[in-house]
Length: 131
Ligand SMILES: [Zn+2]
Image (cartoon, rainbow, N blue to C red; front, side, top):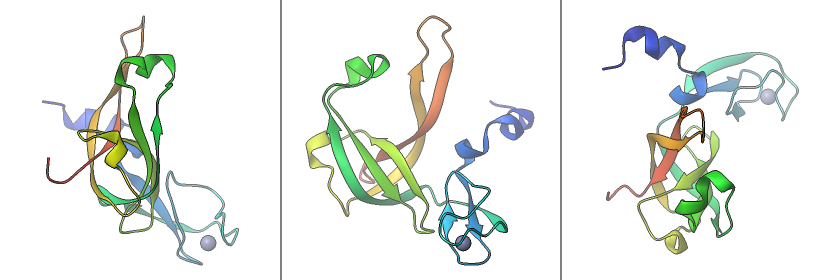
């Protein structure tokens, strides 16, 4: 089991930490210093719900080298109930069935293993809720 220390050290994005502009309410993920909507600089931190709705999606047939054996796969912009947006892979379904409006859960998964170094990279992936 990962220790509490491990949990403190993983990057904020792994915890889906976003920020909400105190001036206009815009949610930025990952957090930003200056609000893209109103140029405000005062934020509150919030954690995004690990689920959302697909806004746009595309099927990748010719992926970067490290994802070669996963193609074809779907990449989607998913919006959480808070308004945070993530670009994420959608897995555990036929990539051709990923459509705008589709609900997905955001699960913390292994994303890739760095070739020679063997470093494991984790991130969130969209998964249809029935899985
Ligand atoms: Zn703002």
